[in-house]
Length: 188
Ligand SMILES: [Zn+2]
Image (cartoon, rainbow, N blue to C red; front, side, top):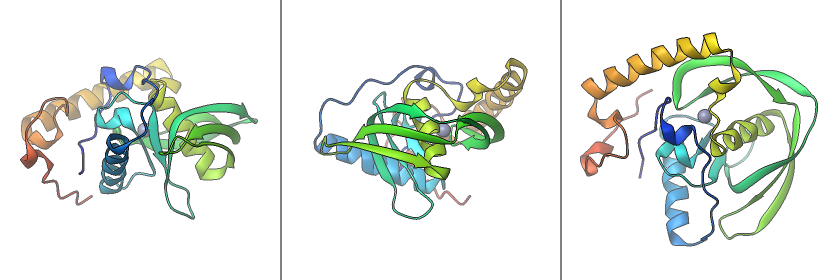
């Protein structure tokens, strides 16, 4: 089931998520919903708090291969910094250069609770850093200057107000609008 994406600014995006402690059917359902929501918006990664769930899990899409889930991830090592342009499903239509690291070593669990370590570079490293940031309450705009962030915030507040008024599908997902709220066509 596609869940609506939470747009920044929103408190759930600005706070660290809680670690996942139960690995079972509920987790699998959440993972499947997140994957569907990510594909619906043509994203290359998604964190649980972006669909309104305060749990420490995310999806990462490599360029060549299937998406994989990261649960309770942490970055163990970082290489030299690099500036990369990025965007975010929670901050639509905004792309900015952000300081990241060329290579990262991460540890995470999968849906069975099994632990993995991965040394990544390229897009996977980039998406991993963006999603892990989300899970610790940092939207990418936090890495920008106060001025830039303020301008984006203004545009986002306008967009949120417009959507709330014209498209009830895109209002705060913590409000339950019933199943008809999910009849998106996602034509983008
Ligand atoms: Zn994002």
